[in-house]
Image (tube, rainbow, N blue to C red; front, top):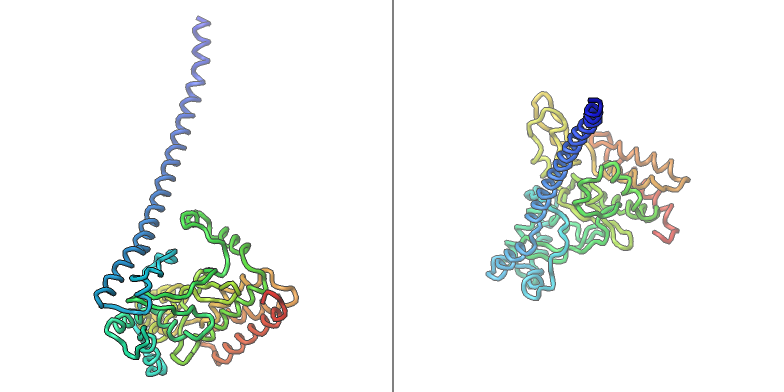
Length: 369
């Protein structure tokens, strides 16, 4: 009897442990399977979107078919479709193009003449039907319009040619203000806070950052109440700005830089419950009129304030101690700038010039500048 009880006592505990271990293992396997399933689904959706919107071969076939039948024309068509010396490389964006009609602009007659000059791709003094159709399609794109208007400005990528609604611009070596480029699959799993810390580690030297920042300030100056009207920067993400090997700022993506007249048409009278409903892009904000529940048309922040917000951490990290306090003071004054402020244009010019002067004085005698 005693021998029969002892084995039973010893066998009961391992069975209990085995049952508990099986439950833990099943729970672990379930959550592991769930994580793999969710991760795979996210990757599939992202990949499907990427491949759908980055179909270089399909785009080329459609464009070249239209070119060969005479529907479209342009200076880049021969290189793309005949000699094949122009080809699609890396897909820089999976976002559909943002289109907006051309609003009323200052010096409209001069702008029309400028557009006709660009539309005459073969420079024969005449705009063919194919060239006209191509130019009209391209004029629906904010970025193309800006490249035409600012073609002589240093910080706007040069327009190299076009074919239909495809346009070619100069290559920019570095396509973000800072940070390290990672595969998009890895980007999905990196927390935003950790990503910002990584970005700060991979930046040029401070004098070179200062030179890039001066370029952004100069670009803000170029689009602020120029001869063809005022343009608003509605997405001041660091990934929309780049620079070349001489550390001159170059705009990488200008699709969210829109004519002020267009933005007013797009956003005014939009139904709203709060100011959060009155946003175009990520950075062009107006206010919600609670009495009418409609968005107003006047933006709250000028381009300069948004540029300074972007540059704050970029410039303050590693800034020379002798100018850090003054630089921080000027940047915060810049960020606080409002469109509705009294004498805004005077304050805008004063702050912009002070910032440029402070940065230039510090880097003008360095090799990095």
